[in-house]
Amino acid sequence: MEQSTESHLVPQQQQEKQIQTLAENFITALHELEAGSDEEADQIAMLYAEDATLTNAALELGNKKIEGRDAVMRFWVEYKAELGQAHSKFHHITTSDHAAGLFWTTEGQSPQGEAIHYHGVSLLQYDEMGLIKFFRGYYDTRELTVKAAAENSAAA
Image (cartoon, rainbow, N blue to C red):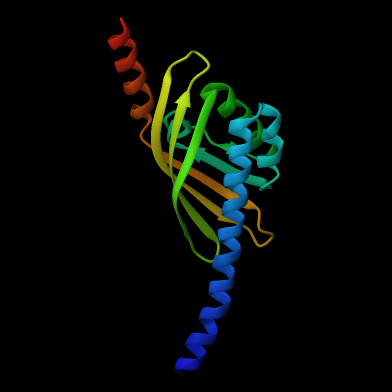
């Protein structure tokens, strides 16, 4: 009985290792987008399935979600435009056989010169081809607006 449990763990560990690699590929593509131009959004979009869904806290406040690879690419172009010179530091990655949780802090400067600092978690669920089929960003949207407002009032 113990051998079947152990033999079951080996394939699961292999799947988790594959998910770890896929998550690292996402992080690399995001870092390239953050360091480069919005033209890098194509690289990150190619990590998503054609019918992928992307959502986050800000989108949900507006009862919106992004569906399809082309729309995902437009999302990442807008991300780059809105956050400007931001850099995401990933401090923890957790995986299962089909998903990864990425814990991060994003800091930098917006195109308007405002400081950016917020943190959260991104959930990436993968399909059988290793493409992201569902992405969900969890963060406190107030962290972005409160910090910007506090810094603006301190500068006045």
